[in-house]
View 1 (cartoon, one colour):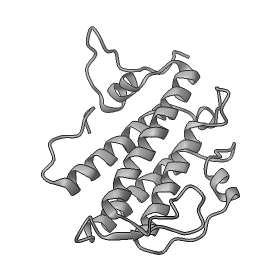
View 2: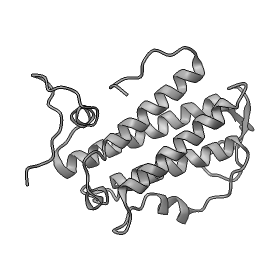
View 3: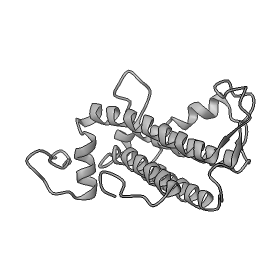
View 4: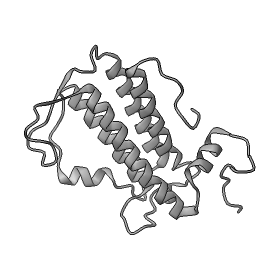
Length: 191
């Protein structure tokens, strides 16, 4: 996928293309990292790139469960655990999990006839509005784009703190863009 989504034919395709683009940007922040680097928390925050990818994958999966009205009650511990990426975790496994979540999302959304279909707001979640009974599938997709973009930005900062690599350099490297006078694809440091 290039640096921007291509033209879209309709709203559904557009929402999924922009969600895919934000997933790509988040995954690209991990390009070329070792498992140890993916677990690094080089800023004052406890965020790591591996943890961010795990969190976004689990959050997206949870939202699709909500669309399907199959949601389980979460817990503060489960929420915090989704951000953890420990010494025994493998970046490839977390990325594979995220890819599976993306496939599931696409399959579920393909089966939804109307993006205006109501999605009941789970009750008892302090940050969900008490005065709203339902969102729509459209709203959920927009929220997933926003959530993924927020954490992709976090991942950009964490990655730059690890080795100075920036988003466009990493995207150029991941996609094999040619070097230009104004953009050089990221290269691993010399050993």
